[in-house]
Length: 353
Image 1 (cartoon, one colour):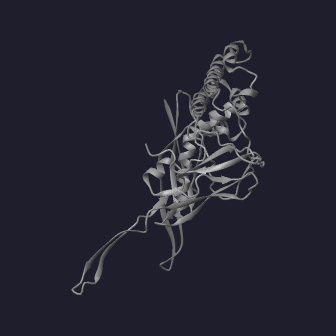
Image 2 (cartoon, rainbow, N blue to C red; image 1 turned 135 degrees about the vertical axis):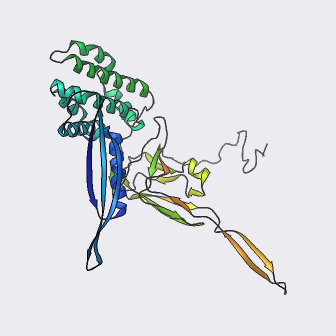
Image 3 (cartoon, helix red, strand yellow; image 1 turned 180 degrees about the horizontal axis):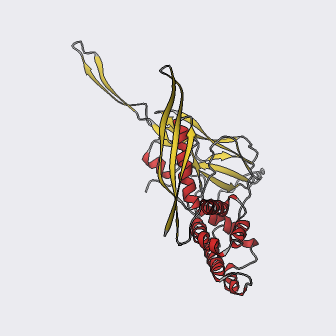
């Protein structure tokens, strides 16, 4: 195992920006297959005549790449690996990226292929990636399991490149077999990002009904307060469908935050930004302690106030569900039929036990 370490320095003009840069690099590290050995920032000022006239935060990070090879590793190799992994994670055309990898000389291929293959196969464990494969299953003509067997017949490829292709094909075959039948129908929904820092709704698990919505900023909701939380997203929902906003069960269990109009309906004709109405149902005043003076008048000695609740930037705070909506067509009759077991039994008609 050989290791290549590269140090990156970035100048930021706010502490929040410095924290965000480090967070983004950690996310890139997970996606592109390297690790962050160390990350931090230093506050620096520029002074004139003893007064601060400028300030900045210097971010310094150490990126570490591990390779299962004895070959000499150059800085260009590392950048090429990072670029290919970024393409394979969905940022560019996957087939073009793999083609570029296969066109490398054998020594470079031996250097880069293990990391690329590991990164790509790990990405298939992502629920949203699997759903994309499930969506494309009906359009797939090639059977990847059979493709893996046919790779040996390819001409012009070395043994190590054939082995790479077979592992890639088998990984895709396993992903497809596990996602068949999960999603029988997919609806294409155009969307627009209308704020910075938007993270798209995601399914946490492949068989989930709801997609998680992520907070754009930090929010504080006081006891008894109702607040509108923006998502930064606009949708063009097809006719015959609606998007519903529902609460997260864990947040409802552990806090007093609730989605006010559950389930909230986003109609197909709505083209504005989707926002979520969140309320803190905790009472502003929980308890009042008082004593009586000599004249029998009450004197308040303490007030127990309700607690603030928080939604932090990047947290899941609600769910988005796509639902099909049939249209109702009412028609007038002389009398609706009453020959049912319940008839006109209303509230409380079934009892409590």
